[in-house]
Length: 224
Image 1 (cartoon, rainbow, N blue to C red):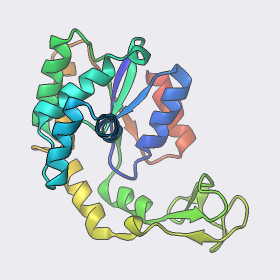
Image 2 (cartoon, rainbow, N blue to C red; image 1 turned 60 degrees about the horizontal axis):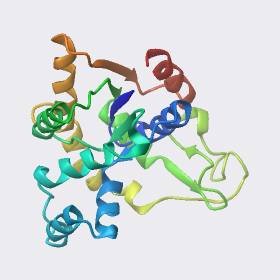
Image 3 (cartoon, rainbow, N blue to C red; image 1 turned 135 degrees about the horizontal axis):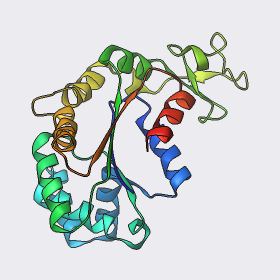
């Protein structure tokens, strides 16, 4: 089962991806991790990517896609994989689709977590970190995990915020890319959605991201 995952920052995409990974024993392949691994190992593609990154430039698709394919061809991906963080625009979606077909690697399922922009931003800015255990979920905008005043809802410890969670300009910048339906990340998701409509073997799953983690996970598993 080869799965491509889409969802805006704040939608719980990482959490749902981890649930799918554990339930179906699939490697969770994240594009950022692929870059870091290739650079740390000093691969040829990693060296080429680093040259662009060091200059502050985007790594060209001609380097990124071979890196991703190389990762998807590794032994742990033989029974399937979950790809997250790529493609980020429509052109990348087209190139990834072509590359997967050329490598005889079928894409089975595309998952899109649907969440409106305002709710996604509030969820990011509402996150609170327990100083005792960061795995204790607290969010002032989500009733199910709302803190007890200014204390952790799980253990009662102090809470803190991450600076990047409170950077509204940075959040808006990331969301501008994701919610762009003409050339951005949603456009890349919709490219695969159109393929599914036209009779390809791809199954396109849409999930409502507003309910709690357990509800979204239950819907996802029921549709896979």
